[in-house]
Amino acid sequence: MSETLRGKRVAVTGASGFIGRRLSRVLMDEAGAAVVAVTRGGGVEAGARAAHAALGDEAGLRRALDGCHAVFHLAYEFGATRAALLGGFETLLRACAAAGVARFVQFSSIAVYDDWPGGDLTEDSACDAPGILYKRVKRAMELTLADSALTHAILQPTIVYGPRSPQWSARLLHQFRTGAVILPDGEDGLCHAVYVGDVAGAAIAAAERAPNGARYIVSGQTPVPWRTFYAAHAEIVGAPAPRLAPMETPPPPPPEEDAAPPGPLSGLARVARRSLGETAVQDIRATLQRLKSRGKAEHWPAPHEIRLLRARGSCSIARLRNDLGYAPRVDFAEGMAWIAEDWRSRGRG
Image (cartoon, rainbow, N blue to C red; front, side, top):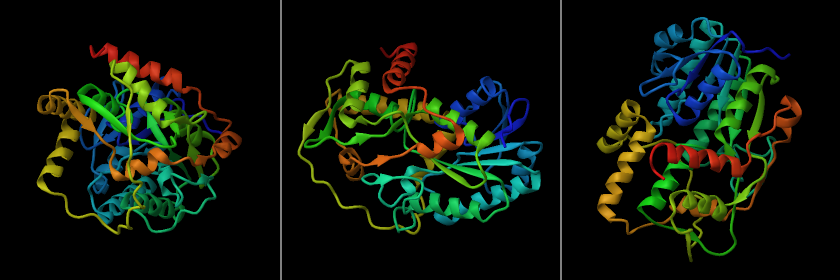
């Protein structure tokens, strides 16, 4: 049954992050909801009520979620151990149950599927083989949620881009601004890019209309070649298109069960992200890189990125369309135009 969020209080965990901030904005502006932005630090969208609570803090989470109709869970701390991540998730679920939350929307990932990025994927594809920690934790969260009494839906986004996306927009713009970008030669792979606003729209549709326990792949209208994706970012900066070079495609990484305890530098990076926000950290990193390289750096893809950049798999959003009547609204050209406008607005152009 469809239940509008208008006038209701909803919570967003990870609300200071890239997707969390956009979701908060769309929830307030388009869905008419009152947003509680649950975060350990960092800025939140204007108009949202900030609630500072760690995922392991059950009492703090209960206070934050009091009176909330729905919870959108995006928070994920890279570098944390599997035990810490799953323990925090279970604490959040207990807090939701205690607060009487009616709807829970979990942000998982397309990476849970065993054949990502090269397979032809639907929500029924296999996803329980061993893999890297991120895959295993996201899948374990899906299974934990399925065993809970919470009414829920699960979103599995692909490559989420948009203005200030730390991984798929800001990082590329910074690379083109600070040097040359190198991509693998040979057959070009397909980028399943989805604009951040469309991910926010899918999350709201899931909270309002999804059957309990449904899982949805969330991707864009059509995939674009990776070289096109990169070249569009180069054009914004006024840099040359990526250069192609021979590269060996590495095998899939070995399975991981846990993460090593973070070192002092990674700990400082997490503190900086919580205090300053991801965009500010990216800007500092780019400035340091420019000073070091004097514009002559070469940015080569990491081994795991080579596999992604060459993959030509597919992923279906038919279930999202059929169940929720929702389709992506922003095509790649419009998405890049929004990124370019944001870049110019900050005096980068």
